[in-house]
Amino acid sequence: MNCFELHKDIDHVLITEEELDEANTRLAALIDQAQQGRDGQLVLLGVLKGSLVFLADLIRKLRTPIELDFVKASSYGASTVSTGQLKISLDYDRKEAENVDIIIIEDIIDSGNTLPKLVKHLKEKGFRSVRTCTLLDKPTRRMVDFQADYVGIVVPDEFVVGYGLDYDEKYRELPYIGVLKEEVYK
Ligand code: PRP
Image (cartoon, rainbow, N blue to C red):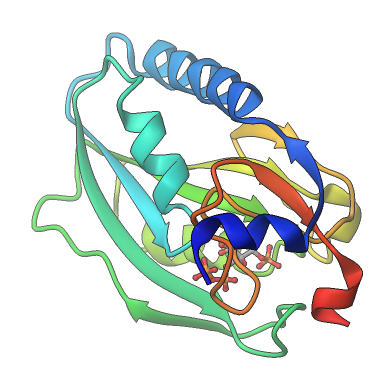
């Protein structure tokens, strides 16, 4: 199977490459604007693995100098619905926490179980600020009241893959966000 054969599992394209590019441009401008006049260091912290493609495109649109790092965190539980417990398998630490602004970069917020716990965990390390930026937001699935500081595109409750997002570790390399055919995961 090659990458092009993955397209046959996609019911329809939900967000095109052009729309993703527009969302990235808008988010980068918002982040740049918020950092204006602030001293210290901005760290963009990607949550592996889903955020990787988004993060790679986003940082190339920023004017603010950044440091780039990663965490790996997920909620325990079933494959398509996350549950309560946060598991951090790659943590982020930095000698100097003062004067450091963190923006956690996510591909999607679904139930909202993962991100608020990660924010709390990082705040406890003493960083000056911890904000969140997500490419996609699926508010209809929310189990926890949480709103990201920066949101790219609000999506309906459909099974989305591509542009970093996977199903069973597949489809991350698709250049668009597509809706997976039901027969693939049911
Ligand atoms: C996805 C996504 C978020 C989380 C969102 O990660 O990247 O981290 O789920 O879901 P929630 O709002 O319901 O907590 P996943 O655990 O699938 O790992 P991945 O990034 O490696 O695909």
